[in-house]
Length: 348
Image (cartoon, rainbow, N blue to C red; front, side, top):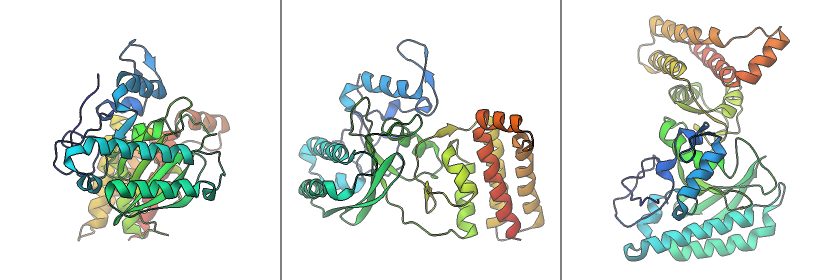
């Protein structure tokens, strides 16, 4: 069974939508759940299934979705004529699918080789939206490539995935399917996701479109603390980001936003409550006009309550290896708390 979506019930995106009754992503939004972050139970067999299997099951149950999730940016919807808006939405979807397929090349392929197709893409999108369109290569990583799209007055990031790379926690299946849920549950710590396509099997049309965030070379302590506090309050986090964030050198964070939707984890409830409490007291100490010793003491107290349960004896190699294997998430949170403590101490 497929579900018809309007701008008012696309509740898994935190992007504000214009009021209208004609846009229709017959998508998977309502089926995106914590099972796309962690393994769940099959609705068909009742057996335990992996995250990838949960995604495939949702797609097979909703063939009219065409594997699309999310919705178009609000300014694009405004530019489409109401009488045939659905037709134009599908044209845009197909255009982006084609772009993803052409950009899905082996790792290391240069942008210039597909420059002509990108020119055609830009011209066709301009014909539909009536907005000037430009595309520019802005970087390639281990899993995919990113491009800066300038459409009208707004900037976006288009991410596609290498054709010769597969991953258990990233890539064409998991990142587009997890992004809407991360936006909903991530306390605004993740970059705004607009729409994308989940690619499965041998298909190479998986992509994501997100908001463009201007990079900053280095955040001042107050900016970094705001970012860390948002993450502490979030029930869903990117553990890949935690390690490098603790060192303050993450490529998975642009400005104050996490841009990586792979390797997501749901925070265990008791730990989540403790982290939120710590975030509250850190916020009181650092950002209130009266930075009293009591507020700072409370902040340190909450951090120290959480940290011992995650600490390990680094001299015991077997215990350390065991910890990393089974409790990598806690290890990353511990590193994050260390970073928080350092910033707070330097702020006095």
